[in-house]
Every structure is written in structure tokens, then in C-alpha cells.
Image (tube, rainbow, N blue to C red; front, side, top):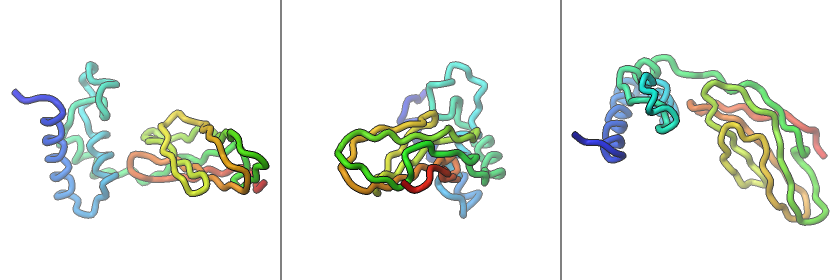
Length: 157
């Protein structure tokens, strides 16, 4: 009997190798998605405790890889501030957006003045302190396959 993260890493690596052998042009994101989506979720004790909410399944992962997700998250909107804005003094700024919709939503990528922060699904605001001056920001939702949708939003300020 062997268990724990060391055994899990070896088993998961083996399934990933199998998937790359079956689909050599697959991306890492596609293989990761296939492993997660293809898991056997019939074990309630694992729900909320492991990434895939179930047991690793090579056959499930192969089936999921055969049907890749190519649909980007649904359009969503930024609510403020404007994507380009000026601040007169140093201070906190809250960036906000409506939630994106995607059954496999992985999270959000928020870029503020060239600095990227990765945020979990369910997040719709981020607060940070900025220096005075001109600022630019963008937020994009991404799913397990790496499909992305940039927020539409406020006009230039």
C-alpha cells in the first residue's frame, strides 16, 4: 500500500505522460483540464479536499482530452475605475468587475500598470495602493483550458 502526495504525484505524472502520448500537440493546460474533468467524482469524501474533487482516472482523462474545451468564458464587464485613469495622490484604489460565467472558470488575471495578480474564481474586486499619476488596468477571466476573455468596461478617464 502506498499513499500520500508522493504516490499521487507519480500516478498523476504517469497519466499526464499517457495523455501527451495520446495527443502530442496538447498543451499543458489541456492536459491539466483533462485530468481534472476526467476524475471519478463518485467518492463524496474527496469533494472539496482535492483539486479534481475525485479520484484520478486515466480513462476519464483520455475521454476528456478527446473533447477539449475551446469556449472562452462568457463576456463580463469591468465596473471601475476607467481602464486608464489618473490619481492625484497616493492612496487605495479598488478595481471591480462583474463575475464571468464558465463552468470551468479557473480565475482572473488582473494587470495593473504592468504588474499581474492572479485571483481565484468568485473574486470581483481587488484593492491596492497606487502612487499619484496615470494608471492602466485590465482584467481577464480564464478557464481550465487557458481560454481567456478580457472584460469590457469603463471608458477612458
